[in-house]
Length: 319
Image 1 (cartoon, helix red, strand yellow):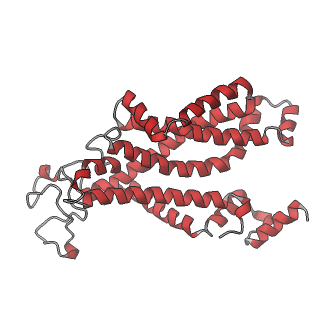
Image 2 (cartoon, rainbow, N blue to C red):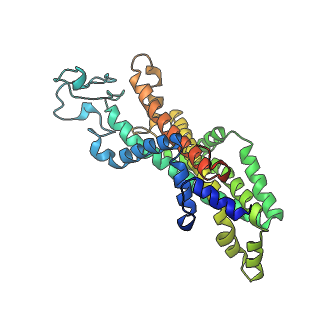
């Protein structure tokens, strides 16, 4: 049986028409067959909606203390427990569905704004790492020789250290702050993408269509960026989706240690670190940011796993 017949039969088995099918249609169809990926997309969709609408749905400012609010009905208590009128909380008390933090700021508003910051952290660091890693991996894989050796040995040095430990060292040198933390996370993430791209370049650089382009007078950059790199998109998409989860977790860890986002920035890791000693006296201030981090990381991991399976033709019939 020819390969073309096998492909057509495979598409028919999945309910796809060979006449009007594309890689993205196949991927989307397969992705929707995986329940875990759907769960990840639902959670991620909710997070995106929250991030985009936080300024309208947050009842209070995420950085302003209730102690500074004019006309507040009662004197607010620091680390006040959640107050929900529908669940029996006195109508005389202002409603704070997730309570107040140690500076009498509304925890719910800070959680909402933290979703926006976490998504920005993940997308910005991974975008930076993908751009730099793609260029380095493509140059090393295509040209080989001493260029490849220098690039990959540098990547090996970075990989020799635990990523979070290396990020802590970089931020320690640059100084605490969210921007320095993002730069550090981006730097330690570069080797993963460089290795993925290099492997893809090595696997296709001697194929017939590449050799034909070279024989027709195509220059190295044209061959590299128009013929070879498109084949690296699939593993990059998967690696990038999973990398966003890792970046968010690393940023939260740096902020927890006081090296990332600085007060009063509403960042989940910083919120968790500020109230870490209140786990028994005010557990909602510890568990709620932790749950937010866990759900965000889980959504990207589930989506990344689903994309990996959907983009792998060997798993076409696995649901």
